[in-house]
Length: 261
Image: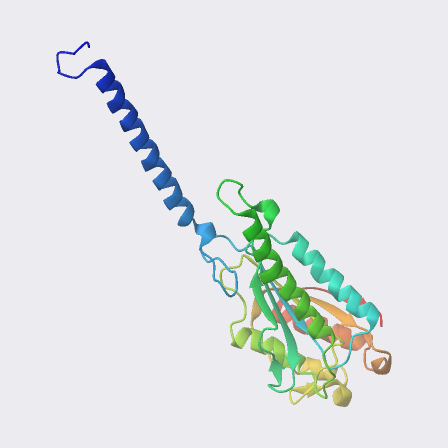
């Protein structure tokens, strides 16, 4: 056996080198596991699925008027619209759905309030369990949203329609996500304001002209105007104009789109 001047044979040196290499690989693996476990992508709220350490590009707020039942066409339109929002949303975008609540004379508690997680197609094959990611997406995000929409469209009729109060509550109750870069507020309603703040039934479009200002300046606001045959004489051009003027004064108003009955 050949022995080097330092007292170690060539085979001993080879063994030490292999041991050192193995130790280095174990250390690298430990670091990799630590980084994966502590990755910001893994740090999400277990209830809302929102991650406060990664970007949130859009917060979608939908306020749905259930003072009257939606027609089959309007129900299908709403489902299709929300489905399109979900498809186009990015990971960690937030969805909050509310209804007009006559019990509180304003905004309900959120029917749903969730952030979009990664789908299996977006999961990293090296660091993620695709089956877990798919179950999380389907069971904790997609299915609850579908159930929430079903419960909203099946809601019973209400005597009051506190549209202004619901919008005021969004600002007063701080329902707008401060971390979102873009706020998209969608109002799904016949826009027949009917509450203590004002009633279209009593004052027509002037009921909207007299509403107090609120602060929704961050929100890009859009209205899906639900046509109602029984309210045809109230759903006038003047009423639409009054709502356009009011929403433009308190938010970044975009448009009113009428949805036939």
